[in-house]
Amino acid sequence: MRLVPVEFVRLTSLSGDFASCTERSRGPVRRLGNMFEMRRETAPLGAHGLSFLVEVGRGGGQATALFDGGLRGDVLAANARYLRKDLRRVETVFLSHGHPDHFGGLPRALELIAARPKRAPVPVVLHEAALRERCWVWPGLRGGRYRLDPGLIRRPGARPVYLRGPEVFLGGRALFLTAIPRRTPYERKRPGGQVLYRNGRGWQLDTTPDDGALVVHLRGRGLVILTGCGHAGLMNTVREATLRTGVRRVHALVGGFHLCGASARRIGATIRDLRAFAPRWVIPSHCSGLEFEAALMQAFPRGCALDMVGTEYAWSAPGRP
Ligand SMILES: [Fe+2]
Ligand SMILES: [Fe+2]
Image (cartoon, protein in one colour):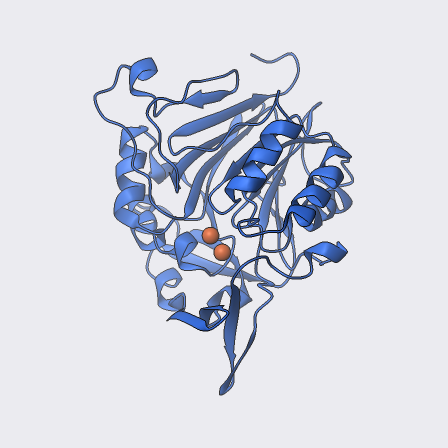
């Protein structure tokens, strides 16, 4: 799948588990939530889940997309306002998977996107398994049930695009990976709690086939890979991104890596395998897990930053400001 290389990639964290108004900017990691650097009297709000505004550019053209909506629409709207990000510019919405901490904020986001007069319905891209009815399970415990209401994305102003496999969007500039093959032996089972989905009358172990990632090729630097929860496995996702695009270099890896509750052995194996790709930036967020975040900081001291709501990651091709 050939991706059109882009000249810049800008990711802005609109909703996420961590909020800090004191974390300092460093190079392309711009802490717009830092009240002191930004001379603001307020700061963005933290809330469980993940949502990123994605801006990619090539020549004079720019494409804007929303990747997930976080858990709460009110938080997403407040943060977009704080960051002065106009969601009416969003051309495509990607839903990484059907968990409420990613789709919960979508109704409000779609309202904000549709506020542009006379616009065509915005495509909402998702794997069809994102509509499964699901529940969480831990040993001896069962969590609440949830399901993404398909009416939410069939509303006026939105047009669902159901996938069974990866496809290219944004005029060839972004690959939405989904149905990611589970090739890495230690990534076959998700760490910590499991998820069940309703299959007919019964409940079955869910492997989250809908889990997806957005992949962009930044000219001269390599791939920028954005994950939601990373349920497909971090290494499975990175390997699939490089195989599908034919681009071996990874410039940045951003998002939820779902290694909360992972064993020290699995964390060690992931760090070892990640080093082989030598990513310039690793930006863990959301469900990555404190132990894995600490391991990343140690392994990639020059290029690791913890994602905070309100952070903008601005990467350009060589020779561009
Ligand atoms: Fe999540
Ligand atoms: Fe999830």
